[in-house]
Length: 91
Image 1 (tube, rainbow, N blue to C red):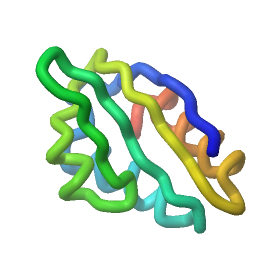
Image 2: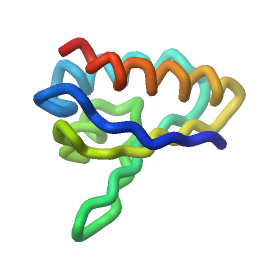
Image 3: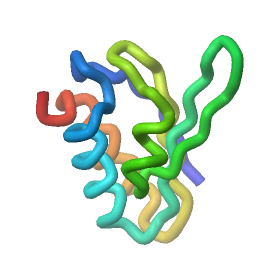
């Protein structure tokens, strides 16, 4: 299992279009990919391969999330997931 924290740079956060790109990228890998976000009242975990799960996490611009990858291609998956977030998710 590998993980890394990253800050959401997209001005609108992970709304429908960026969430779709994020999930489409996650689905390219065999590994289980999840997003963890800590808020003031609760800790949220979302399945990065499910658009509804990602949208339900209500991730906004400036939020710090942890991307967790677990499986055969976890290193490659984590690297690519971080790259697309740092690139701004197609802002």
